[in-house]
Length: 215
Image 1 (cartoon, rainbow, N blue to C red):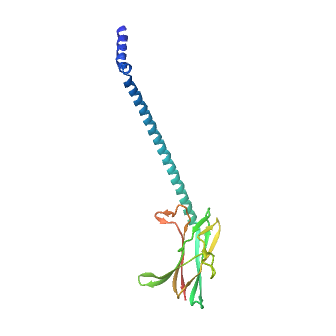
Image 2 (image 1 turned 45 degrees about the horizontal axis):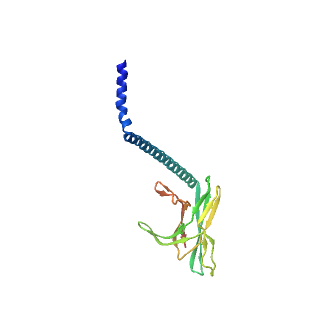
Image 3 (image 1 turned 180 degrees about the horizontal axis):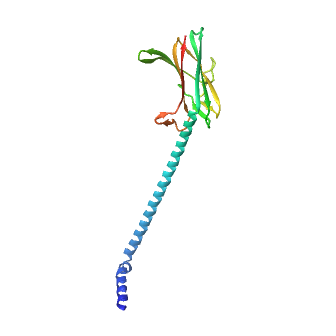
């Protein structure tokens, strides 16, 4: 038994001798262990940070997707219709076309439409054997204020809000030069801070149209 204890003491002495006699080696090992601990902490921190970033991005994407789905439901439950009337103006020797757009919001949220310069477009159409062609194109605006002769310019609406279960009517007016077939279109996009909404690579719009025969 004494021989075994003596052998163990001798082996331990051999193992610990470099650390006891060579403090520099010991310090180097301690420093290396500290560096490894620091690296491990940095790696762990970065992994946790990336996980938090990924979770935040996923939550944001899910929120945007829910908003898009809600807008789709709102657009599907919103009705847009257009009616047109016209008259001949002897003074200007032109035809006055008066489109009227009615928007009914049957959804669960209010909708906000962006009204642009080409939201209402009137195209004079020529019927060909193999299709249609546009002879001339006009645009009309929804005015908040119409200038008098001595004022610089009129002021037009750029946004239109339709509340839940609400209805809005937009009157337009423009002059066309000659009789013929006119194609009247109303096309409005949702007003969004982040730009356009695309569904299956198609822009989400409210659209309606009608042909008018001016004679």
